[in-house]
Image 1 (cartoon, rainbow, N blue to C red):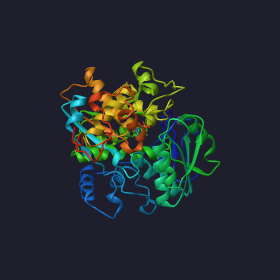
Image 2: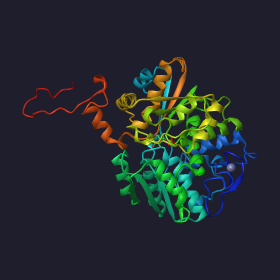
Image 3: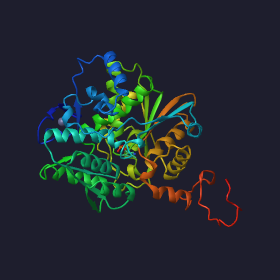
Image 4: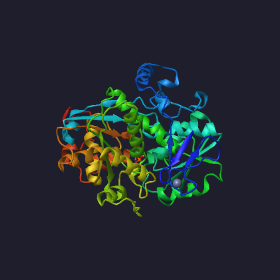
Length: 425
Ligand SMILES: *Cc1c(COP(=O)(O)O)cnc(C)c1O
Ligand SMILES: [Zn+2]
């Protein structure tokens, strides 16, 4: 298994310990390079179709189904899986009307086994770490990466230790991680501080790092676009819209689209819109200013805790993806995010605040004339609505941030001795 430096192209082997996350020459991040010269796209399309109906085999997984394009070197006996992927694709009319496009798909990565898209990448990273012979796996996390790692560690019978910033992380995610049995360490600092700590200490502590600086995470997350394209019979909509925090998902989308396009699975690249939260938008600010180096945001702050990242490790991969797809970025306020979330929740699909940034951003891009109302789009819903129940209470019960009355729902207190008032509103 080979990787190459994003900055200088130096090749790095990833087949034995110690695992490398950065280029030894220039410190750049790594991407996996595949030899696809033997890949026959027409044959693989048929194979992928056949696997979609399978059960009780790794091909039942929405990640491992596409193994030839993700990690062909891994033996089936190291593969860790919990039937990740296989997520629903929905077209709720209220959300389409809210966003203002002709056709809108929601790809509900929230339906993954741990409740977020992190499972797509984590299944592959943990499998690779096992293959290399690691027994301790670590990450720093705004909550979902740690839940996902803890879940796979429990399944694979390995140790997980996670670093979680003590503030601005949803308690639901920390508790989920705890319940799966991981060692949970909270610290006073940001996600970015946790990443820095791991990059200095992980190898010496014998830990395999499962953050998205690990290029296997990106390879696994490519399956999201593979599955979406497969669901739509290899005809993608005009736009793919997704939230951006550490930008791993944007990077994976770029890599996945590149693979599908160069192999001939798709004959047209969609445009991609990366949506950040205003309080944590260093990538959007860089792109808007036409800069080519990222200036980190020292004090990121947004209610969408999964986006609360000031120094996104995968920004260069995300920039290359934007250039390849002629994509755009946008930033949305917490109030816009929570309003979009209420709309997605009401449609019966539901998502956590960070995911709703995609829908809020799509709406903004349509209103600003960057996306035309005649165009079609797919939003990636990254996490489940049960990942942040405080956000639901704040919006519906407390009315913050500035909850529009039409989307608010409240609990009524009634007396059962009278029928008065116990009716549908
Ligand atoms: C991790 C995460 C994001 C951000 O994805 P990146 O790959 O870090 O940009 C968005 N939404 C949810 C629910 C997440 O868990
Ligand atoms: Zn390099």
